[in-house]
Length: 116
Image (cartoon, rainbow, N blue to C red; front, side, top):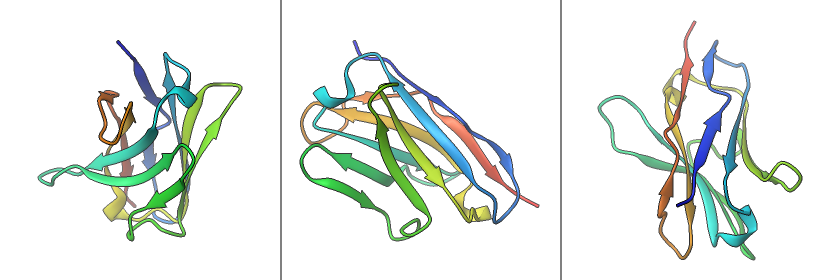
């Protein structure tokens, strides 16, 4: 069983930045893709950013240009740099990993709250 642990969430003001990190118990390059999802209160979980082996990155329209997903080879983590945060970015953020196309491993999530 693979364990994914997210860290880095917190409370920030609009316009500020946060960096989320997802540590995996298995070599991250063994996965077909890894991604960050988020779920706001009363809403469905949505894809935020994905990094796919051999295919690069993709982002939701709502975060494109503000968020960046990347891997840290030495730490075996997938990171999400979030800038110019907005109140609508408030959500629980989840890391996922997939052996094929769809996620089959999930972290427990980390809360990001953007409020003045």
